[in-house]
View 1 (tube, rainbow, N blue to C red):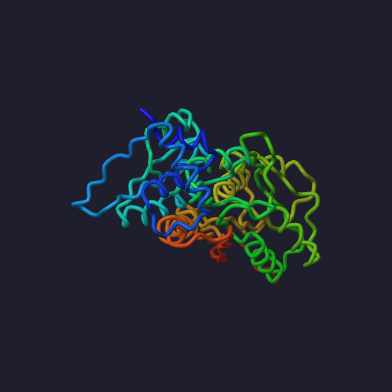
View 2 (view 1 turned 120 degrees about the vertical axis):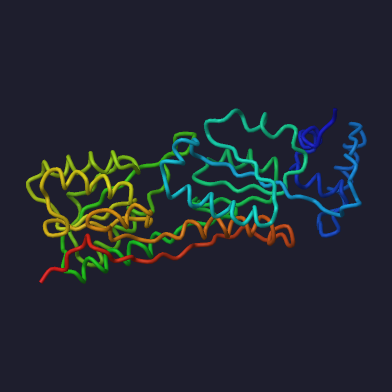
Length: 337
């Protein structure tokens, strides 16, 4: 049986574009030579379009959500769970068919080989250039959430890390802190390339701007409670400690808080903490965690809105939406006299 993938392989065009041509999409604006090429190859291969059930006059959109995490790793990270739930909340309200693909599942080509009409793709996380190009084979209606590219060649939505760190360092400075450490993580794309650390870059930038010492207290592992715990163990071996710590995720902060408690270091009396993301658990820590609210649900919701409503109606040049943040002040930062 000849499928749209066979036509895509022969022509080099995406399955989404081919489907729109063969279904006579009146809103499609492409050169006539492209349309003629697709129709010619489909006839040459003997492609038979599936009959459309016109009595319903209805097409249920198929949206693929591709996650750079495994299912188990995603469930342990509220940041990414919230992005996915935000996207699915909107897609379910639109009665879309959702196809989820996680990093640990079988090859994407096997999962999608029998799906002719993919209406859009939402990529959650950090993807390599080769992965981006591979996904484009299946649809040109695609957006990535929580991904940064130096050159804007794909649609993306990400947190305004510069704004988040500005708010954090400004608040610590107002509270009288002149020495601040950083507990963070390092991320890599599937091809082993280290992902730009926008949080750390902004942290250094604003520490320098506010004349805050930070150079001796930068620790990088993973975005997990275990890493937060381990980084505090390293920190406590040092002779001099900073008066405050910025943690690149609430998960890191909660692990750090546990380790500090176990070693008898009082928070915030002896060391202050700011987290990142405003996880539900941050409200119930002792003391409750001062943190940055990253609006991850909103990022997922917006991504779903664009692939279902905006991009299909009008093709746009690649866009980047930068989501604002809020500083949530609770009990882990001491205001010095």
